[in-house]
Image 1 (cartoon, rainbow, N blue to C red):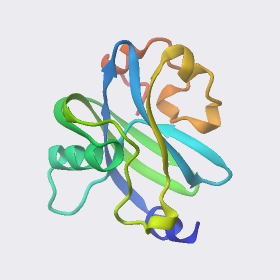
Image 2: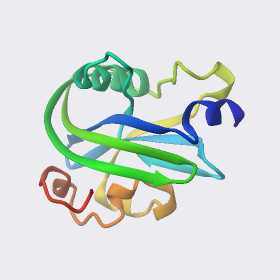
Image 3: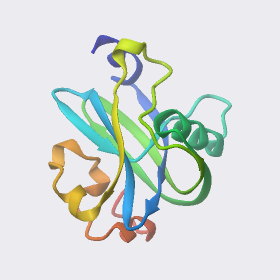
Length: 157
Protein backbone atom coordinates (compact mmCIF):
# COMPACT_ATOMS: atom_id res chain seq x y z
CA UNK A 1 0.00 0.00 0.00
CA UNK A 2 1.88 3.03 -1.23
CA UNK A 3 -0.36 5.49 0.58
CA UNK A 4 0.24 3.73 3.90
CA UNK A 5 3.99 3.69 3.29
CA UNK A 6 4.00 7.45 2.82
CA UNK A 7 2.58 8.06 6.29
CA UNK A 8 4.21 5.38 8.44
CA UNK A 9 7.28 3.77 6.94
CA UNK A 10 10.83 5.01 7.33
CA UNK A 11 9.92 7.54 10.03
CA UNK A 12 10.37 7.59 13.78
CA UNK A 13 6.96 8.29 15.29
CA UNK A 14 5.74 9.01 18.81
CA UNK A 15 2.57 7.03 19.42
CA UNK A 16 0.10 7.19 22.29
CA UNK A 17 -1.73 3.94 23.03
CA UNK A 18 -4.39 2.81 25.47
CA UNK A 19 -4.94 -0.36 27.45
CA UNK A 20 -8.61 -1.04 28.16
CA UNK A 21 -9.75 -4.20 29.92
CA UNK A 22 -13.39 -5.28 30.13
CA UNK A 23 -14.43 -8.58 31.69
CA UNK A 24 -10.87 -9.96 31.49
CA UNK A 25 -10.65 -9.05 27.80
CA UNK A 26 -8.41 -6.47 26.14
CA UNK A 27 -9.57 -4.05 23.46
CA UNK A 28 -7.60 -4.58 20.24
CA UNK A 29 -7.58 -3.22 16.71
CA UNK A 30 -6.77 -5.43 13.71
CA UNK A 31 -4.89 -3.57 10.97
CA UNK A 32 -4.66 -4.93 7.42
CA UNK A 33 -1.75 -3.78 5.26
CA UNK A 34 0.26 -2.15 8.04
CA UNK A 35 2.87 -4.88 7.88
CA UNK A 36 3.58 -6.66 4.60
CA UNK A 37 1.41 -9.73 4.01
CA UNK A 38 -0.24 -10.06 7.40
CA UNK A 39 -2.79 -8.71 9.83
CA UNK A 40 -1.55 -6.88 12.90
CA UNK A 41 -3.40 -6.78 16.23
CA UNK A 42 -2.52 -3.98 18.68
CA UNK A 43 -4.12 -1.79 21.34
CA UNK A 44 -5.80 1.35 19.96
CA UNK A 45 -3.46 4.29 19.53
CA UNK A 46 -1.66 6.45 17.08
CA UNK A 47 0.66 9.28 16.25
CA UNK A 48 1.01 12.34 18.42
CA UNK A 49 0.62 15.58 16.45
CA UNK A 50 2.79 18.62 17.04
CA UNK A 51 1.14 20.81 19.70
CA UNK A 52 -1.31 18.10 20.77
CA UNK A 53 -1.34 16.86 24.37
CA UNK A 54 -0.82 13.18 25.05
CA UNK A 55 -4.29 12.94 26.63
CA UNK A 56 -5.94 14.62 23.62
CA UNK A 57 -4.11 12.29 21.26
CA UNK A 58 -5.31 9.24 23.18
CA UNK A 59 -8.93 10.44 23.15
CA UNK A 60 -8.78 11.26 19.43
CA UNK A 61 -7.17 7.96 18.45
CA UNK A 62 -9.68 5.87 20.42
CA UNK A 63 -12.59 7.70 18.85
CA UNK A 64 -11.13 7.43 15.33
CA UNK A 65 -10.18 3.75 15.60
CA UNK A 66 -12.90 2.28 17.81
CA UNK A 67 -15.82 4.72 18.04
CA UNK A 68 -15.32 4.85 21.83
CA UNK A 69 -14.99 7.89 24.08
CA UNK A 70 -12.34 7.37 26.75
CA UNK A 71 -10.93 8.96 29.84
CA UNK A 72 -7.11 8.59 29.94
CA UNK A 73 -5.80 7.18 33.20
CA UNK A 74 -2.38 6.51 34.60
CA UNK A 75 0.75 6.10 32.54
CA UNK A 76 1.68 2.40 32.35
CA UNK A 77 4.88 1.96 30.33
CA UNK A 78 6.95 3.00 27.35
CA UNK A 79 7.78 0.67 24.47
CA UNK A 80 10.08 0.96 21.49
CA UNK A 81 8.41 -0.66 18.50
CA UNK A 82 10.95 -1.51 15.83
CA UNK A 83 9.71 -3.89 13.19
CA UNK A 84 10.90 -2.84 9.76
CA UNK A 85 9.68 -0.77 8.04
CA UNK A 86 8.05 0.74 11.17
CA UNK A 87 9.72 2.48 14.11
CA UNK A 88 7.89 4.14 17.00
CA UNK A 89 8.29 5.19 20.59
CA UNK A 90 5.00 4.26 22.25
CA UNK A 91 3.50 5.64 25.46
CA UNK A 92 0.90 3.30 26.98
CA UNK A 93 -1.84 4.53 29.31
CA UNK A 94 -4.70 2.88 31.12
CA UNK A 95 -8.04 4.08 29.71
CA UNK A 96 -11.63 3.97 30.88
CA UNK A 97 -14.43 3.85 28.33
CA UNK A 98 -17.03 6.53 29.10
CA UNK A 99 -19.22 6.42 25.98
CA UNK A 100 -19.52 5.80 22.27
CA UNK A 101 -20.24 2.63 20.31
CA UNK A 102 -17.61 0.00 19.54
CA UNK A 103 -17.11 -0.19 15.77
CA UNK A 104 -14.19 -0.33 13.32
CA UNK A 105 -13.02 3.20 12.69
CA UNK A 106 -10.95 4.94 10.08
CA UNK A 107 -7.56 6.56 9.67
CA UNK A 108 -8.28 10.15 8.55
CA UNK A 109 -4.86 10.45 6.93
CA UNK A 110 -5.69 7.59 4.52
CA UNK A 111 -8.14 7.59 1.63
CA UNK A 112 -11.39 5.62 1.83
CA UNK A 113 -10.07 2.84 -0.41
CA UNK A 114 -6.83 2.43 1.61
CA UNK A 115 -8.25 2.09 5.12
CA UNK A 116 -6.46 -0.44 7.33
CA UNK A 117 -8.75 -1.02 10.31
CA UNK A 118 -10.40 -4.37 9.64
CA UNK A 119 -11.81 -5.17 13.07
CA UNK A 120 -12.01 -3.96 16.67
CA UNK A 121 -12.69 -6.51 19.36
CA UNK A 122 -12.19 -7.44 22.97
CA UNK A 123 -9.96 -10.53 23.19
CA UNK A 124 -9.34 -12.60 26.29
CA UNK A 125 -5.93 -14.15 26.98
CA UNK A 126 -6.87 -17.44 25.34
CA UNK A 127 -8.01 -15.70 22.14
CA UNK A 128 -4.93 -13.46 22.16
CA UNK A 129 -2.62 -16.46 22.53
CA UNK A 130 -4.08 -18.02 19.35
CA UNK A 131 -2.99 -15.05 17.23
CA UNK A 132 0.43 -15.81 15.65
CA UNK A 133 3.32 -13.84 17.19
CA UNK A 134 4.05 -12.05 13.92
CA UNK A 135 0.46 -10.79 13.82
CA UNK A 136 0.30 -9.22 17.28
CA UNK A 137 2.08 -6.37 19.00
CA UNK A 138 5.35 -7.33 20.70
CA UNK A 139 4.01 -6.32 24.14
CA UNK A 140 1.92 -9.50 23.98
CA UNK A 141 4.69 -11.93 23.00
CA UNK A 142 5.60 -12.98 26.55
CA UNK A 143 2.38 -12.01 28.29
CA UNK A 144 1.25 -14.49 30.96
CA UNK A 145 -1.73 -12.55 32.33
CA UNK A 146 -3.53 -9.45 30.99
CA UNK A 147 -3.10 -7.82 34.41
CA UNK A 148 0.67 -7.86 33.79
CA UNK A 149 0.14 -4.91 31.43
CA UNK A 150 -0.71 -2.82 34.50
CA UNK A 151 2.40 -3.73 36.53
CA UNK A 152 5.32 -1.39 35.87
CA UNK A 153 8.64 -3.04 35.11
CA UNK A 154 11.47 -2.63 32.62
CA UNK A 155 10.74 -5.51 30.24
CA UNK A 156 9.13 -3.24 27.64
CA UNK A 157 11.96 -0.74 27.24
